[in-house]
Amino acid sequence: MALCLVVEDDPRQRAMLEKTLRAAGFEALGAADGRSALAACALHRPEVVLLDLGLPDIDGLELLPLLQTRFPLTRVIVLTGLESVATAVAAMRAGARHYLTKPWQRDELLVVVERELRAVDLAESLERRAGDGGVFWGTHVEMLTLRGQLAKLAAAPRTSVLFEGETGSGKEVLAAELHRQTGARGAFVALNCAAVPSELLESELFGHERGAFTGAEARRRGVAELAREGTLLLDEVADLPLPLQAKLLRFLQEFRFRRLGGEEEISSPCRVVAATHRDLEALVHTGGFRSDLFFRLAVVRLRVPALRERRADILPLCRFLLERICRSLGRPPRALSPAAEQAVLAHPWPGNVRELANRLERAMVLGDEATIQPADLDLGTEIPVPAAISALDDPARLRQALERNRWNLARTAREFGVARHILRYRVRKLRLMEPTPQ
Image (tube, rainbow, N blue to C red; front, side, top):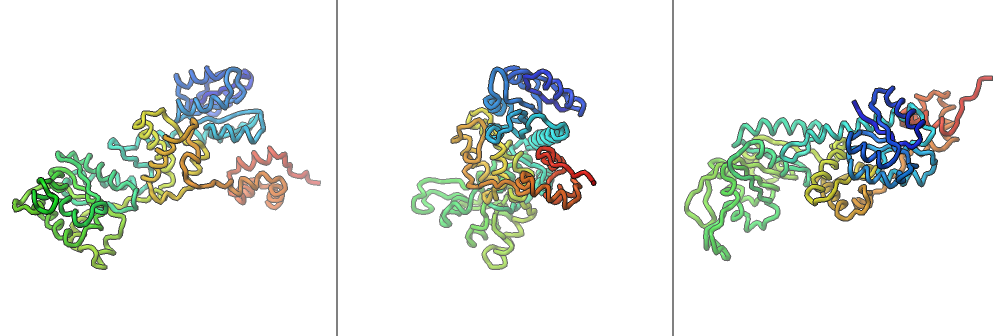
């Protein structure tokens, strides 16, 4: 059963809130001040905190960052009698998930609490779904399909695999996870074919003997040899020159090769995994890639979806990445502010997961506030106020819509594109009354 902590110095208000929450099926605890709230959070780890800003020992706006930093999965809903836009903005920037004014409405309060509890459940379940090898799978159907396919491929340690997807989408991470699941005796070795000059690619792939070319002062093993009994990842395989493609094809057929300038034939059985952001089939048709090599590499083709296709996974992925980044930097945990979450969701992420990880690390290193703000991410994205919500703050426009729909709340809510409880709250707040029939 979900636990809610009510932080309220007024005993009557605190008792009413606890009673309301228990009647709705939640567990509820009370705290009369900031110190008690921090102690209760440390002991009981509540999913949701209902926080009054006017506490006797510490200002609620000072307590918010402490809660956010120490208990990043806890969702804080602010309750206050201060009907001030400035206070609301400050609370949201400090880490509050929602802002309600007193006297609070029972229906709206419970809707907000239930929504935040769903968010907590989703975050925790998705974090549990993260693979042991550091892969965040999420809930997107293609990612879950990939997870099942990798599990099957782990039992076929010589089958070649081609990962297709945009740059930064996680192809190398998935290749490493496949290697981990396979339990191969050898190493996971990667070669980025686009990052090496074409004249040096053969040496990088197959190695060279001393004196094979100018500057070859000693024997050097290539990645094909280093990956013996393991996994060889050829990233950006479309950049391989055609002559080298023929030599790679022979290696894939026999798992044997010669070092550059060498006479000895070397055996190095391994799994070869290729990755590309380009359309290899189109390159085959234009003569830029060998068809026989394509079919040899693409025994199994796996498409990795772009981050923008996995919108529901973005915020849980942020939490997953932030935990890893904080651990690697030796920093205390930090979370995104609600405004930063909106910025993250609005961004198109052309660089995919790699770009997201880089932005989050930048925010961790350069940000000064307890929660990560949009400016820390440097996305250059302004988040507009949704038109529907803005329109609901216009009493005249809202009244016209209600009259047009004969005061039918469900129909009016659909017209504005908002939930009915949001419309009902605005109607009450603006004190709009249906005219009494004459």
